[in-house]
Length: 358
Image (cartoon, rainbow, N blue to C red):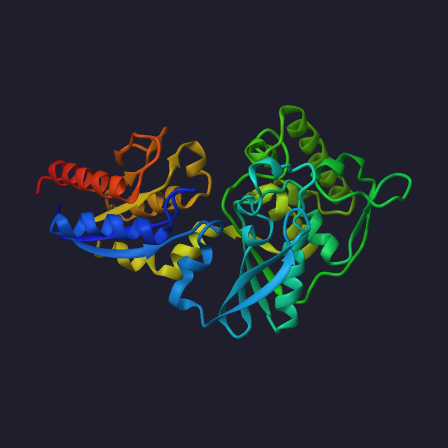
């Protein structure tokens, strides 16, 4: 292996290890191998977005908004400068805010994200980056729009209740007003809003039963049809429109947001390109790696960028399937502790060293 610098891209292992725990465990293994670790904290727009930006944030502000069931919740917003805010939407409408028995995307709402964007606009934000991922909602961003004064109504003109389960009855939208800042949605996936690869594919993991998944899918199709009647039908097909249960679409339709890769944006902020120029190896991991990891998630983005820079990759993940050719994998065991991760990283590093001939 030519050189000794190892770039560690640390992110959370969902519901088990924090980015800091991941970084510490892998860094320890790299040092024990006699190599030089360089840690980059990553996120694809979901869990850990503010932590990934770290020292680049000039301040944080605290706000009270609605959670997915419209209960009050306090959360932080990060600021890259005095007029640029970064919002982590999962802190307002995420699964982590709900008990297991409360997870029901037929009734959960993204309203809190809309309230939060209004709040930072009132503080003088001219630009807002909205991280998507980890949401408990499949409402197409309609909850967000409600916070901006939009009212969805049925054929009789009656307002619809909150949640994605009401969307099939949508007849039209009584318009509201978008906040002033320029909005950018940081999507964690490339899924469109509708179709077999639309937001429906994540509905079950948010708590929807099979019949509920079909109802939500029909509702998103109805929302897309209303958007098409308003001359914005192309938005439903945008990569990332289906992120966070269609919140990507909602930001684009109601907020005129641009949708970009969250992982790509975070890695640009971290300067990964420059670090790869001097790296002998990249180490990245997540709790479970599969086909969806290559559809906008951080791990897939890291692997792609390392491949383009001709830097080998060690992937650490307890559960793995469909790994790209050439990636060295250390997996198995289901769930890892910090010590498990350090041991697996040491084993993987030894394999990489042997493979590359050091």
